[in-house]
Length: 103
Image 1 (spheres, rainbow, N blue to C red):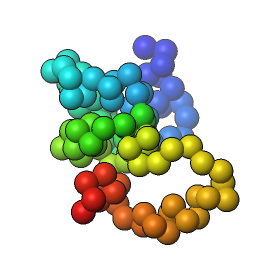
Image 2: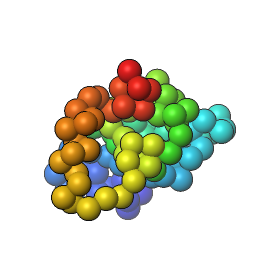
Image 3: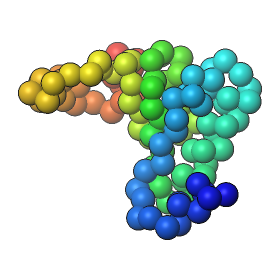
Image 4: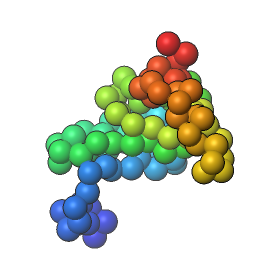
C-alpha cells in the first residue's frame, strides 16, 4: 500500500515497469497478467508506461500488444557516452516498435 500511495503523492507522468516483470512477460501467464495490470493502472491514472530491461524482440512484441507506449533496454542500445547519443538518436528517429522490428 505505501508504494501505491506515492502514485497520488507526486506529480508523475510515467510509471516504470520493473525488469523483473518484463523478464516474465513472455514466459508465464502470471508475468503477462502482472505487466498488463501495471500498464492498465498507468493508463487509468493518465500516465504512460515504460518497460525497463527489454532485451528480446519477443518482449518488445508482447509489450506493444499490451499497449505499452515506451521501452528501454539492451534490445535498443547498450550503455554509451553522452557524446555518442546524438548519432544514435539521429539514426533511430523512429517509434520504439519500429526500432525493435526493423520496420
